Amino acid sequence: MHCPALPEGFDLTDPDLLHHRVPLPEFAQLRQSEPVRWIPQPHGLAGFDDDGYWAVTRHADVRYVSTHPEIFSSWLNTAIIRFGAHIERDAIDAQRLILLNMDPPEHTRVRQILQRGFTPRAIRALEERLRNRAGAIVEAVRHRSDPFDFVTEVACELPLQAIAELIGVPQEDRAKIFEWSNRMIAYDDPEYAITEEVGAESATEIIAYAMNMAAERKRCPAHDIVSTLVAAEGEGNLSYDEFGFFVLMLAVAGNETTRNAITHGMHAFLTHPDQWELYVRERPSTAAEEIVRWATPVNSFQRTATQDTELGGARIRKGDRVGLFYASANHDPEVFERPDEFDVTRDPNPHLGFGGGGPHYCLGKSLAVLEIDLIFHAIADAMPGLKAAGDPRRLRSAWINGVKELRVSVG
Ligand code: HEM
Image (cartoon, helix red, strand yellow):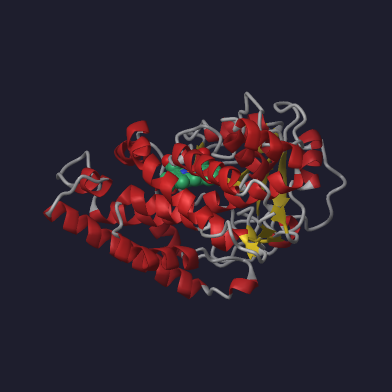
């Protein structure tokens, strides 16, 4: 099987390819004719003996890889890296302290500890405060007479506040944590003018802040997740390093993803007024999941084969990189009826926007769904006539399906 229509040099990690065309039309071609396809990276990956990756585009295959960590490891690195990028070995070593890049049994140990912070009870405990936050965010813009940017004025704050609430960052420290978090994600987008050094410095600041916080709570425990995670010595707790990297990961995993889900959700509603009317009237509890399927804020993650194996008709060799394209799986017609329609009542909705269901399945899913529900409830209550005031400006990135700006006006 071969997919002849793809142009020479086609690479799904090219940020310009995904910039304006999501879902990418090539995904449909790949799913149909070559669902596991080798994508050469002729420019290589500086620092690595590596010449490409397998692109996995069907729902069933993405699920298979995600649920077989013994064959497809997360250890080398889970972000698919852009062609020509230079990766320092030190950076790879540091990334191994991040949960996303661990394999069982180490992953199982650390995840079991972290899960204590994400129990249904822990999330319920945040609900009232986050509802008030969502209400206040919307209250601050509902009387605006001029158009404003939905991303900075509405979508940005709740995800950051949710993480701060979750780990108990005091109010007076939040502004600096928010600034570090926003600066840390080293975009491919030149408009942000964020150098890798600035990104790395911000990451170091967050880790240092979190380690300090952990040490303080150990001395003087409080009723919060930090105290639960680090208070006692022993196997069932995190070291200060582990806690530092955990907070760093939350600042990336829980921040931009949820912000983009909220922004894409708003854009989807603005461009599907029938769905917005239905939402304002009936508030279907299925809406948040459909927003995540539709938006797929994380386009892909990667694994590395630990042995020779077969997948979707392709022969994969030990050491090969395997890219999981959630953005494609979420439009797979084998699984979704009318996959390209935005339908907030879609049920069931087995989308892979939070991952393919294996051990790394998004730890913050319930929190993300809660945030999306709360913000859209607040918008539907206070400004149901919100209108688009321009097209969204997309983030230049192959990994994050992001929107930088979405101008709106209160109708
Ligand atoms: C993992 C998506 C929000 C914390 C993941 C993965 C995806 C994802 C695709 C990888 C799954 C895999 O490899 O199988 C999203 C999306 C979100 C969101 C689309 C918002 C709409 C959050 C939030 C938090 C969070 C709010 C926490 C505050 C995590 C963590 C992991 C993770 C800790 C790593 C889990 C592991 O490796 O065991 N997320 N996420 N995420 N997410 Fe989320």
